[in-house]
Image (cartoon, rainbow, N blue to C red; front, side, top):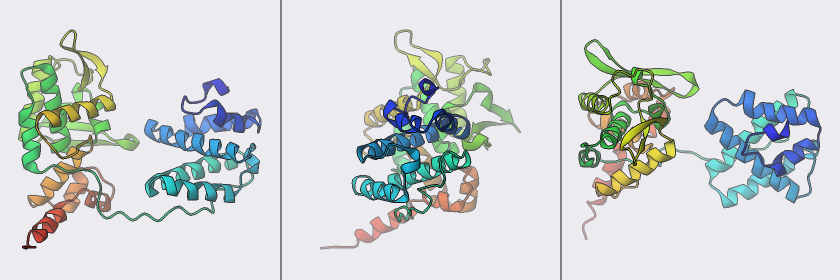
Length: 319
């Protein structure tokens, strides 16, 4: 059973669990497979458990039942000094969920993380870099669309800008998720939590998608992945999914080629689209709906209009 544990759970980690018996091992394994469905959350929680259990062993704790709230509190206190507050909060949340699962399974008598408070962290403005509309246009126009890879990259970046799509939802699309309705092209995004979100296409995005589908020969393959990896040897799409890390590397190359000095990432274009929409008179409520946010408070993190006001005021300092 222990051999089947997730790859991110090292032998050091589950050896502490194994000391509590086979039933504890099964419950621990079950948490990361049956209980945590999102692969990104699973990876983050597995890393949190791995590092905490390694810390426990270094401090002489070798049994699950020997873990106390003071151990968790000391670990989080130490973590705060080396890592950011959001990281410490995430690790604490992972431990709370894991220990809750073990308590429910009667592996542990109480949850030692339940009484531990995480660090305060108040965010009123997101840290995601945002491009000016002129920079976004510069990047899109700089892409060489004489090749399939150029058509793909422009369509992917355009999708994130004009539909506020998350990178995970974008690279998970199939060709049939681009469809015509009421004489306009629409996109269907499969968001986090199994939610589906449909958006009509901006006329620029419509042109990008049509050009890509026709150029790649994907229009008649509804079940094919929309954004696929690319073979440099054949110059063709492979049919395999485009990994998120590859999309990030592509964006870095395209930004550098377009002389974009702003540090960009996969999430930059979602934030860029939201900010541009709000600057052009869009409402926060509509932006939240278009971005598929459950709350406008999340959407506000993407709104960087206040930064322009700050820059204008700074330029008034004439010396």
